[in-house]
Amino acid sequence: MNSKLNKLLITCNFDIIGNYLLLIYAFCISLPGTNNIFKKYSLLSVFLISLVLIIKNNTWKTFKINSKNLILVLLPIYCLLAFLYFPVEVDEKMFWWVEQRRLFLLIGPSILLFGGVLKVNLSEMLNALIIGVMFSICSVLFLMFNKNGLFGFDNFFENFNCIRARYYSHHVPFNILLNFSSSGIIFMLFKFNDIGVFKKCLYVIALIIISCLLLNTEGRSGLLGFIVMVSSVTFFYIYKWKRMFSIILFVVILISGFLVVKNHPRFSNIEENNISTIEKVGRLPRLFIWGQSISLIKERPFWGYGVGNAQVELNKRYEKYNYTTGVKEQHYHTHNQVLQTWLEFGALGLVLVLIILIFPLYFYYFHNRNELILFWWLILIIANMTEPLLKESMGMFSFLLLLYVMFCDFHELEIPEASKNLPVI
Image 1 (cartoon, rainbow, N blue to C red):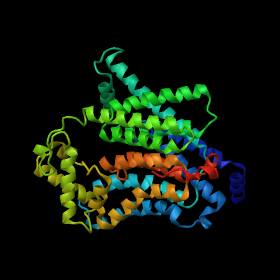
Image 2 (image 1 turned 30 degrees about the horizontal axis):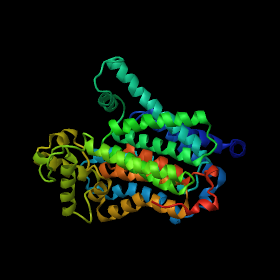
Image 3 (image 1 turned 180 degrees about the horizontal axis):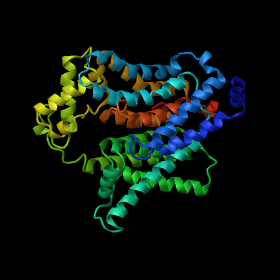
Image 4 (image 1 turned 120 degrees about the vertical axis):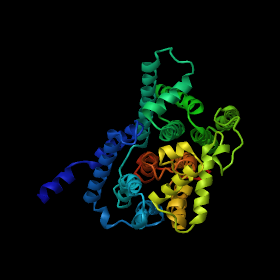
């Protein structure tokens, strides 16, 4: 039996299989819902083939923990930290509701740590992601036309946003993937010189469609992420051969971004807000949620409450101030990754999450010159300001995609010596 298994491991090219599985996952990640079977099982398939690679290559015998893979150690620790609080958890249902998803999704960092890395064509993976995002956009359009007819709605973008929210996907993973794919398109247009004219036209059309949706349908974090990402991308490429074009584009984006933010309905005409009472929250209920989270943190800044107990305490605050939405949902978290971790795990959790969130920037600067890591990191940092992505499976799906870009073996991206003087933003 062992000889047959060894023969199978030798004859099968698991790197090629893993490459295609990762492409499938990159496509499926944009499909609706956190419990979508295509999204979950495509990721599970990547995990399994990576385990086979670990066994086949015996990398588990030689792996080392060092500064390059520190995040792969800290993420599982961050996940397991919740079990320290389990004996005192009041809401065990909430505890398992959060932890079962963390445990599954954080298999990925553990596998990468032991050397189950895939040899992947980055441009193919980005193409799969872009096609998946465009498929999702077309799916929402189909739902719109099916519900309202070809001309049966007054405001296209408002209707798109409502249909997407009601039938397809939560806005946070959707705008993260829109931003991921738009930055991926810009990255490939600048990075790869062998793209044909027809393919370039398709990329530009896709970029225009995605940009229009981000500027008109997504929330504040998606819009801010898009403007910061595009500005950073153009600034980065100022130092490349398309210098003048990048300078002009950078200025145009900054001016356009300022005008869009100034006149965007989600930013303009915001009423006076107060972080203590719901009566003065106006259009920014997150200020109230952040205020209550901070007040709870001040009561237990070093130890924290635990996963379930933290939510119980937040729910009490919502009831106290008659915050009907928070009370009704019963799992309205802090809407900020740093606050969420600090509230749950105290000072130790705060240190862990800060290192985890900042680490991709460190990794880019010291260990890799692939600027896509930098662009996606910016997108996730902004998203974590309004959502605790490491608490939700919707956030971990996109975070894992960044980890694969950081740790997979991309031979096509060996950076020549001359380009190592590129800036770090």
